[in-house]
Every structure is written in structure tokens, then in C-alpha cells.
Amino acid sequence: MTDNEGWEALNPALAQQPKADDLDLLYGHVFKSVEGRKVLEHLRSITIEQPTWVPGEDAAFGYVRTGMSELVRMIEKRIARSDNV
Image (cartoon, rainbow, N blue to C red; front, side):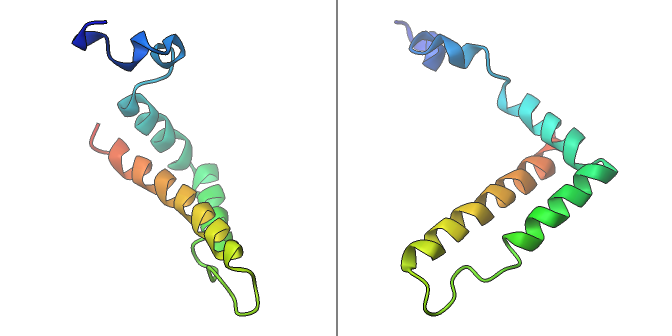
């Protein structure tokens, strides 16, 4: 394997996936629409805008909630990057 083959040489399925910039554009296209904004607003309201953990719950509950919120943050980051592509 030469240096310029990259990860695609190890896993051909990676070569078929959209590039990061293309994905950013797709996220921007979907979530900048009226419907997409409503979906993102809903996702935010049930994740980021809720407590990560509440007293009496198992610590694992907080880990799961943090992961859920991180997914919404990842979507928001891709939307923001779509403006710069």
C-alpha cells in the first residue's frame, strides 16, 4: 500500500462514502429547510435543553444523555461548516 491510497485501500466501502465537505452540504441542505429547522429544534429540546443527569438516576443515565446531546451538537457543527464549503 502506498501513502496516497489512504484508508480506502484498507476498506473499499470507505471510498463509496460521501466526502466530509459533501456531507456538510447535505446536512446544511436538510436542516436549513423549514422542516429541518423544526426537527433540529425538537431534537435540541429533548437533548441539549434537558438535564444531563438527575439525582437518584444511575450514572450511566448521564453518559447516555451526554451522547444523545453530542449527536445534536455534531449536526449543528456540520450545518455551520456547510456555510464555509
